[in-house]
Amino acid sequence: MQDPFILFWSALILGSIAWYGFLVFYVGIKAGRDIRTMIKSPKAQNPDEKL
Amino acid sequence: MTLTPIDWIIIVVYLAGCLFAGLAMRRYVRGVEDFAVAGREMDVNLGIASLAATEMGLVTIMYTAQLGFEKGLAGASIGVLMALAFWVVGRTGFIIAPLRTAGVMTIPELFEKRFHRRVRWLAGLFVVLGGLLNMGIFLRLGGEFLVWCTGMPPSWLEWVMTILLGLVLLYTALGGMLSVLVTDYLQFLVMGVGIVVTSVLVLINVGGFDMITSLSDAWAGNTGMKLTAHPFNPFDGSSLGWGYLLWMLMLQFAAATTWQTVISRVLAARDAGTAKRMYRRTAFYFVGRFLLPGLWGAAAFVYFAKQGGLPEGITSLTAMPYYLGLILPVGLIGIVIAAMLAAEMSTDSGYLLTWATVIYNDLITPCLKTPLAPKGRLLLTRMLVLGIGIFLLFYGLWYELPGNAWDYLAVTGNIYLASVFTLLVAGLYWPRATARGAYAALIMGAIGPITFLLIGKQYAIPPEVAGAAAFGLAALGMIFGSLSSPRPATQF
Image (cartoon, rainbow over all chains, first blue to last red):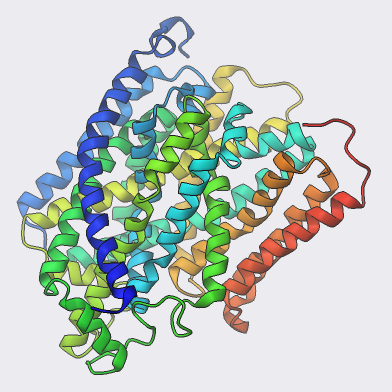
């Protein structure tokens, strides 16, 4: 395990798994709110302009 | 078939949920701006979810796993370069900030403002050509995953992928970017869970970091299969090498600033600051985009090396899904398949919408003497989404890859990445750039990649030569073309 490349890739594997796990929860909650805001925006609510 | 009724229920519930959410967004679409860029109302976290879901397709998982199988963990160096490119662009706002501020719907639209209407049309043609050829193998590779992971008969491949594409077409053609954003969000969640669970299971299966020792043994030739590339050092001559990595660095900067499916998220963002934050926060995601499926591919190599070699009919491309089908427990495989379908669907929908928007906005609109009515514009864009779907079905079935999947994707993307990147940099930051330079850059930038696609197999042209030559030729075309024509009268 003294090869710097091996240490580099090992750290990145663990970091990537942790980052993906974190993003699913963090972005999952925040992006859900973004969708609600986007749908409730005045532009999306104006039925007169609908095609 | 390795799927049990529980797996099927998970898959069907997931597909029904996506279809329902996608179709529900249809009622918010009022015009082409809503359809193509979601009314520019997207905020940063939804942008991260959408960008991450679109850029992580089943095709991505297949080619990154193939890189992992052939080149070990070093194959994921491309992901590190991609993350670096996204972070630098997100930090500096290079290209994306002025592009978002310009308020255009596509990149070629900017070229009309900066150069000439015909430059917009020609750039649109190259963008569509490169993009559609690139997307052409998505269905085939996605189908290969399903065949080898689930053990379904290969003769089902075309039908399964046709049904899947049909679902994607339905909600994309009706709801446009609004549907794509909402379904991308669902797909981001399912895909994220699937990738984390699979990565942990794969690590457990290969004995954790004992895999490092196994890869070293395979590199030394002490196992049933010899690994021909250094599994950890990407600079080693047997691995990717300096020349290839340099091309990848150029390609990733060009992709971060030019790839239309990525840029469509920039253009849908609320403002330039939102787009920059989205880039910075998504950057590290791209390391995992190459590294985690690469880990699965490398683990597949270790597994089959211990078995004495690959089973008959299995290749470096299909080894990973076959391996996952062997190690994933009953029940969990349904979640993983749903996650992989999520990856496929989010990518397909994003790409379908993007290329349809470019065809409508940059190839058809400039040729119309009288602009279409809003309803006609929307109908035309929806028809284009359907047309691209039909093209994908047929192209994906007969094209034979000239090399590995990643090289094909990189080279086809390069058809427009090199030239459009050159046009964007020169158009935004070099006042002396002219329309003649733009024409020259577009044409010269496409020569290398198209040559590779047509005769690359017969003459063994290295992809890095074809790709890097495209950047050099496009830059030369822009410089000499611009300097040989009068200085532009007005500044952009």
